[in-house]
Length: 154
Image (cartoon, rainbow, N blue to C red):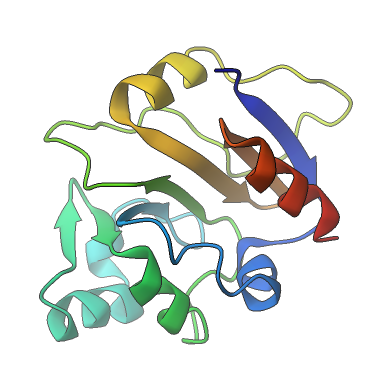
């Protein structure tokens, strides 16, 4: 299974507005950055999601939520406004998933290089899709259909 990485000229918020079903199949989405903040417990919109939805929780400061719930939350102000990052899993990742990779921020346009160790971490953790935005949106996925959908979204 080969990891496909790429960059598209969009943001996570805009992408989810356009492809509203994208996160629905994922049983767990780990949101590791919102507006460059990585300890999401201090972001009111995120802590509100956790308070209102018992299926959501914080894991090392990141938000863990079902994909379908995040699909419904994408319209909330201050959520997915730029410099955001999320990782999608079919099932809830085990303890210590420890995201140490970053996709958010400036892209390395013109290269097909993946961040060091990304494929190994995604394989070991069961992560099927990673999205990070800032200046456009970077992505990483083992799913060729998702990669084609992302490339066609712009």
